[in-house]
Image (cartoon, rainbow, N blue to C red; front, top):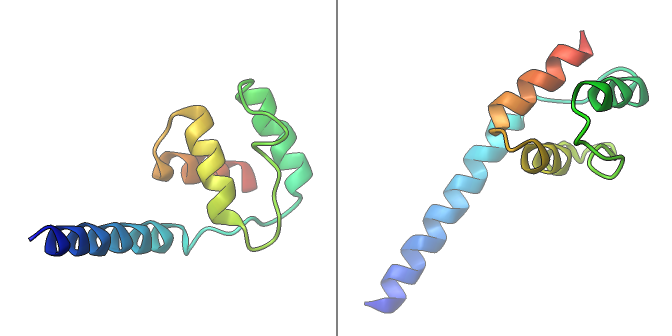
Length: 86
């Protein structure tokens, strides 16, 4: 029974991670990230340089750091970042 429950939780965790990655699948950092990150720090003073460090292809990690620091859900963070890209 314990093995079954363990496998069930593992399956749910993996499915949740896949759904989270699917949500950000449409989000990509475009434009000048240095300028965008400066504006974000002005708007959200609690963000640090470390929070806003970005490497190409690492959008998931960037979103996670900002989400944790601002205590906002992923959808809200994506909305904030997309607003700054326009």
